Amino acid sequence: MSETKSYKLTKVAVDFNVSKDTIAEFLSSKGYKVDAKNLNAKIGEIEYNLLAKEFQGEKIAKQEAKHVAQITREKKETIVLDESKKSAKKKEEASVMSDVTSAEESPPG
Figure 1 (cartoon, rainbow, N blue to C red):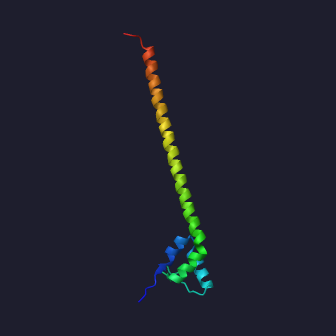
Figure 2 (cartoon, rainbow, N blue to C red):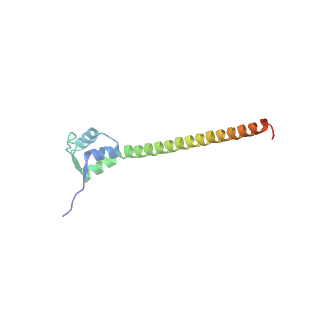
Figure 3 (cartoon, helix red, strand yellow):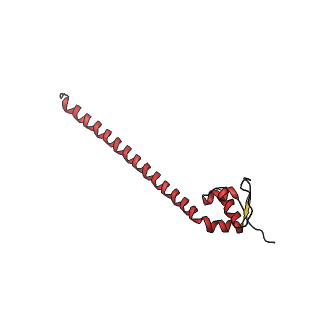
């Protein structure tokens, strides 16, 4: 007895970065019936494979966008850390200069 895998329509829509309505419309055009209004609607492997062929580009684009966003976030974090290190270093240098100036101005003894 072979079991066919089923996929939740909402999960597939998120994975392929398209709406449930787009999926339902595409599958309907291919002769498959899908109830896009049902949040728990499921599709089979055949339908999933059709969607994979059709919408793989959107899935890749979504992954690339997520990757770029992560890189951008990491760069911003690095810049913020660098700026706070520079700021702390400037404060430290100012404090040292202030101490040196104070020591030079005070009379000995």
